[in-house]
Amino acid sequence: MFLTGTSRINEKNHLEIGGVDTVELVERVGTPLYVLDEAEIRKRMKEFIASFQAYNIPFQVAYASKALCTKAMCYMAEQEGLSLDVVSGGELFTAIQAGFPSERIHFHGNNKSEKEIEMAIDANIGAFVIDNLYEIELIKEIAGRKEKKVNALIRVTPGIEAHTHEYIQTGQEDSKFGFNLNEPAIAAAKIVQASEQIELNGFHFHIGSQIFDMTGFEKAVERIADFYSIVQYELKTELPILNTGGGFGIRYTNEDNPLSIKNYVDSLLESVKNHFVKRSLNIPEIWIEPGRSIIGEAGITLYKIGSSKDIPNVRKYVAVDGGMMDNPRPALYQAKYEAAIANRMISDESEKVSVAGKACESGDMLIWDIQLNQPQAGDLLAIFSTGAYNYSMSSNYNRIPRPAMVLLNEGNADLIVERETVEDLVQYDRVPERLTVQKNIGIK
Ligand code: LLP
Image (cartoon, rainbow, N blue to C red; front, side, top):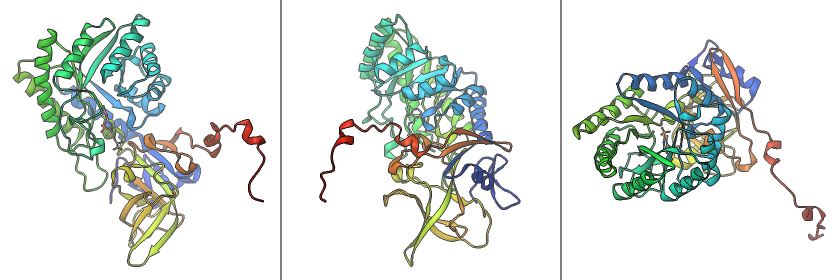
């Protein structure tokens, strides 16, 4: 049985999360439904902080809000002492609206717009993570106009290929992100150093996502330590911060075997200590940006099962009331998930089925070939580990409204994102006057 966080089977043989019976929950709030296990989120946030505190190295753990950005998430990150990584005006606005302390906000993005830069400068965010020369010029111009000086890290591409899906690798040389090592990054650093509007605090790298094997980090840190010795010599100054990005892997299925958060952090900090000390460099303040490893396993999606199609000797399709609109990851990355029948967790009878979504597209499959307890129309299907990059990458394909999101903890179930309605979906539609007066010239 695959369970995550506080999930357990209760006396009614139902899936219970955060002390809440999921079957009773959906009777009140409907399906599809994203639920979040608050205790699991906070436990993971605390584990990151405690793992760093065991070292005598200044640090910031910035939650990568791209994994799941809502005001409630910003509140929890703030309460647990995390910083926040945002990558767009929308994420920044969410953080500001949630009252997140701006000095702990780091702003990423490979094509920040003037408007976004302006918004970030006005909010006095903690740091820009500068991606390219165009951005340097924009920041100089906008900060200059506002007579402000901003703090920044420069993003570099360490030339390391992480062992993960190629669409979520980012640190290899052929990447749209950041400056390549060494010359392009040094040239950028010199431009920033010479500017009056930007204070250079250090560098950032991110090698990819859903990483289990720390050798990629180890290699990247080694390269970065070499780079710090060169660039600090060239700039004749010490850079106080190094940001090593996010990317720690989680458990989607029993085949995934991630390290514990403590092991990830230990391994990272040991490499940093090792490679910086070896080069007689001071150990910089370390920033990291975990997204998936905070929220991934804390999210579960609940669906109602509807139609099915049995093709003898081929397969049985069982369809749910959501799909690639609320979880595009199987279609995009061949991502695998575990699931259970939440209203009949333990049963003697099970069958192999494939879980289809309701979108008009053959590729809209959530799980291929899974053993489930005799799924019937009306049953509740729980898919685990859907907290990261599901809601944040969701769409309204087929004009299907997005699910609601509920935060579960100690028997409480609180709505943190309202269910979208079909009225919401048409609210931005406009019909030009001339369409309303044109006569029907179709064939009679
Ligand atoms: N920092 C930077 C600069 C990033 O680009 C990312 C993720 C993170 C931190 C957080 O990485 P995490 O700890 O969550 O692995 N949509 C894909 C994942 C894209 C990741 C993009 N960047 C997915 O669903 O798997």
